Each structure stands twice: as structure tokens, then as C-alpha cells.
Length: 240
Image (tube, rainbow, N blue to C red; front, top):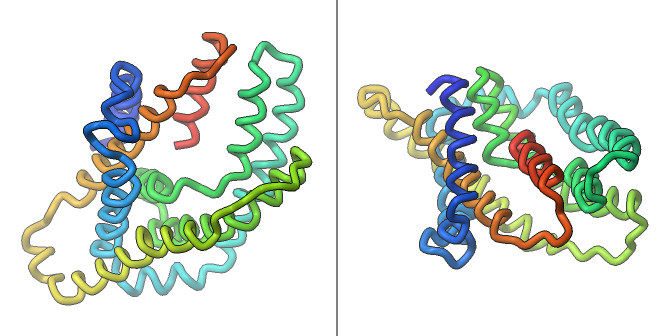
């Protein structure tokens, strides 16, 4: 699947989510609170654990310059750019809730699963993306609430730190380790079978994005005009 097909697939699943959001919403027949949140993400990281050589993971772990660049861009450069942009857009037609959402989105850690898939799609360093996605999510537990408090002046922010770290461990660390174990004992067989791991990963990403947009389209946003809604959809797609 090339980049054009992948982008077309993204647009397709978003349109499907818009047509029937109840199917992929929480409590729907697909049960995304389990299948997407845990199973799909677990399988995605398991595949990365199987396909990435341990030497590549070790090399990526010690790329401190890359980690500083990515985390600095995520938590400093991008929020600063978005802060300036939102200040300018206050004079535009956009709904104020959209602007607040843009600001909050800018201080969030990177989306763990899709960040890796996008890196793989463009031929980037998947091992570095894997580490920084997980590490950035853990840092976000502490940094994101602090930045939101700084930007909006809200002091009462409750973050389920233990739950988030436990979820990251279950859906990221465990599957990668299991994937590495499977790779060690079945590498010759895997090379012989030539399984379509890349295609499976892309379809998992489509499923995660589909259920995410189903949840978004299922919510009623009062007072949101059509132009702001379209802008919100474009912004969400760009973030993924």
C-alpha cells in the first residue's frame, strides 16, 4: 500500500465513521473500548516487536539527540507555534471551542500507534518512533496537565497517572517484548513465510482511526457551525 492509497484509506474510514458512527462508538457492535483501545494497539506493537531487530532497538535507545529533538518539538516548539496561531485565529470565524481544542491538542503527547505507522510509511526510523511514542506518552502524564494549567489557568486537573502508565505498559512494553521473544525463536520461519506485517499494521491503524472518529461524530457539539466542523475534521485528520 503506497502513500496515496494510505491517505485514501484514511479519508474512507473517516467517511464511514460519519455515515454510521454508532457502529464503532463505545458500546457498539465493534466494542472499541476493548478491540481498539487494547487489542489493536497491542497487536500493532507486537508486530513491531517481531519485525524490528534487537540491534536496531538498542541503537535507537541511545540516540539522545533524536529523542531531545522529538520531545522538544512535541512539548515546546509545536505548543508555542499553536499558541501564536490560536491568538491570530481569535479574530477569525472559528468557534471558540475549536480554538481551545487546538491549544489542548498541541500539548498532548504523540499518538502512540499512528506515529509509528506514519514513520514506517515514509521510511523513517521506526525504532526511534517506537521509543519516543512510548516515552512521550509517559512524559505527557506530567507535562500535559502542567501546560494546560499554564495556558488556561486551571489548577484542578486530575490525571489517572497509575492507570495511564499501567495501560502503556500493557499495550506498548509487553507486546514489544513478546514480539522480540517470538522473533528470536521463529526468525527463520518468519523469513520463509514472508507474512504481510506492514499491511496488517496499516489496517489496524485504519480501524483505530475509524473507531476514534466514530466516537467524535457520536458526540453532539452545540453551537458548532458547518465551517468550524469541517475545520475540526481536517485538524483531527492532520493530527493522525
